[in-house]
Image (cartoon, rainbow, N blue to C red; front, side, top):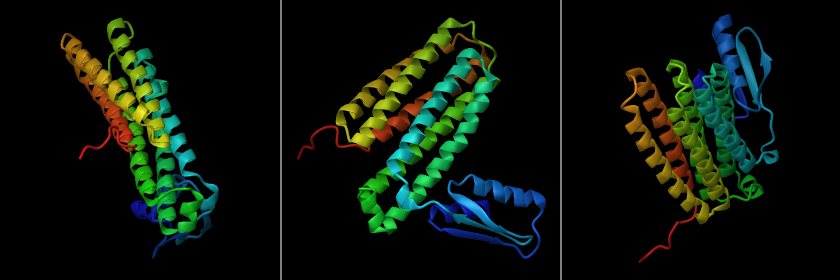
Amino acid sequence: MINDITGSYLLGYDLIKIQGKERATYEDRERIKKAIRQLIGLEIVEEDSLSITAQFLLEPTTLNPEKIFRRMHVISMGMHKDAITSFLENDEHLVKVVCERDEEVDRLHFLLVRLIRSALLDSKLLMKFDMKPIDCLDYRVASNLLEDVGDSAVDIAKNVITLPDITSDEVLKNMISKAGETLEKIQEHAVRAFLNQSAKDARQVMKLYASLTSQINEYRNVLTKKPLQIIIGLSAITSSISKIGHCHVDLADLTVPLYPLMY
């Protein structure tokens, strides 16, 4: 049922009614309400012992796909930045903060997908957004990539909890800190490349990702000399960092061709 609610939201339905043959338990009712609350603009307008009715109350013409995407960018970049900081400072509070913000990225992703689908079905809305159908496809892919970035940031944060305290290991701290800085630069260039169709920024993403890959390979050589628990935990963290970097390479690939086509 939860998947049906989310699916109906993404398909653009303005009114969603959950009707039961019997009274729902308190626990089931709360799960349904939680699912509805996670979808931006969807509010419960009617409720009785056998049914819950939710309605989408936002006017699509007042929304802007680019602004929603930029918001996803800011939150997701802050997430992997804080996830790496939680590792450097052994801060479990930041781990919880990162995990909570992932829900906001998911909510924005669902809203953007709904908006794009609505625009594809309504030519006036498409004109209002100043978009072409191919732009909608690109935004759909780009939004999914930023959602993956958020998920990988959560993976980094969760691995911090399983690691022993290594705040005194300056070598490891410096290595991961540099990787985090490179990751931030990659995301800034990737988002600019996508939004501005900038081949210059897209090429910079490729250069920075190559640098990040070299850094990660260097870290893995250093890790072989560490205790097994640290090797396992840091290998998972570096893999998540690499995955985030690759998401941004894919994002930059959505821009204009990097080089003239040859025939």
